Length: 393
Image 1 (cartoon, rainbow, N blue to C red):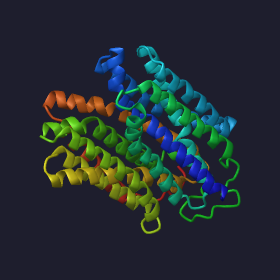
Image 2: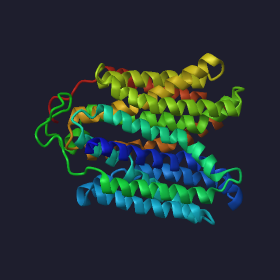
Image 3: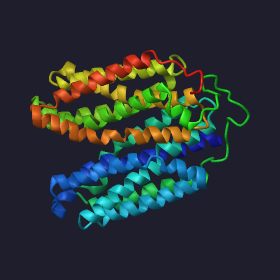
Image 4: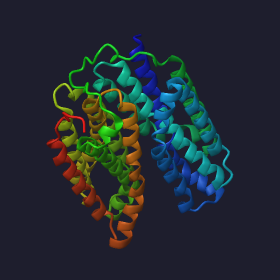
């Protein structure tokens, strides 16, 4: 097998495993953990927030490690961090180990997932659009599979300690295999850029950060994450308030997660037919439509629009903003730039708090959803008129 495609397969498998083993699984394990260890819901929620915050705040760590010690060492360090994190979760006997495990899992996710993944794919594929789409899709499917894997491994007895041990072993194994067999030496840009859509200008990170194009890309990336977090956190209680059964809401979340994953691959396929900034504008418009439908969430049509809008909008925004960052500013600074975009997106961790405050003061999550819809529409209009940066600032 071509080493580029082998690397894509290994990175996709690692992304799938680590996604399935962290965010979606922790949400399912928390009720059993809280009951056994006598935590309040606010105490249990701190760990989930810590997982997300640490994942965002440490986004620059893999870029620094890769530049200093290389990709393989970064993967091995990530494997060690995840081993420690899952061990803390598996043997938690109080809040201390639980919070330490959540924080380490957040750091490990950063070291092993999208930042090193996109870095390698950028170096290995002359036209990385399809590779990005496939990689993001397989990783997203980990979020779909995570709840099912937890139920299968933990079983009716909710054996969460056994689940964390198995999840840790699977993550470490996938990380070590990636470290051993990924192609970390090749760089398709050494002999000149062959993709006409990717910039060959010698941008520095400081120059990019001052460009309006980067500001919009970062805002779009943060925006889809805020919509994702808000949907996962607040859609079920909001829809129940509208008279929708909890199991129906859970099914809608699964459908949303599936569409989110599949639309990333669709983005990779569509790059041959539509410009990435057009895809980004369309995706953001879908998000605006989906958040509006969720705000008025009752009736089959509204629920369908909610799932399709947020599912496709989130996945496509993820893909389009990532590929635009590469196209506009080139391969060389992409590792640092993608890390910074992920760092900026940490603002999404405040979404549950803001949504909860809205519900407390107005009696409904709807005003918060409508505010997000308006912001996504503004970003969509800006993206529609986005121009390729011509001159370095």
